Length: 224
Image 1 (cartoon, rainbow, N blue to C red):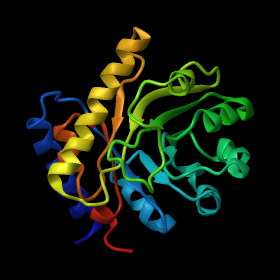
Image 2: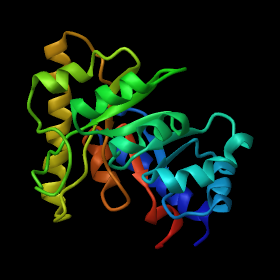
Image 3: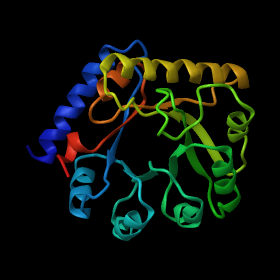
Image 4: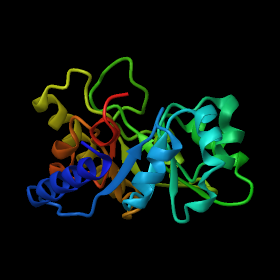
């Protein structure tokens, strides 16, 4: 199956899942491009993809040199960002979708020089011990992330449980949706609007539970 056929199938699945969702919100499709060639990225761009996700600074650095001919592409960092890579990150990416601590958020905020960046707070809603992220609890550190000058937090992100059990996956996504509502109630505004949840194996469940952003790699490009 070629990229166009794969993308068409994903888009159909997204629309079907939206009809089964009580939110009926638009969904951003992020192409997870780890290990994918520039030619593959260029092809999905030509097919209408405008968001790409990379989780390695060094790999992205080599690819992004070719992106000048791709206007309006959003470069999203979706991995765990190490402190010693923050300076490179701020020069390469438009957003970070995996802020897992106030310490990291504050460091990014202080090193942004020329333009504001957006970000998502990562929340561990599955309870998997090997995952990064805040607990789904209102904490001072999480709330502080929302009031940084140069880093605009506009949503939450979570990963489905390692078990990949559909029932447990759905519960994890429901927890994030409800937690977003709690955060917005706490701060007294609708500051957080995005729910990033769902990958190749579970994005339809995520959309049914209110996801506004899904990341797909394998289902789009095939196995690595």
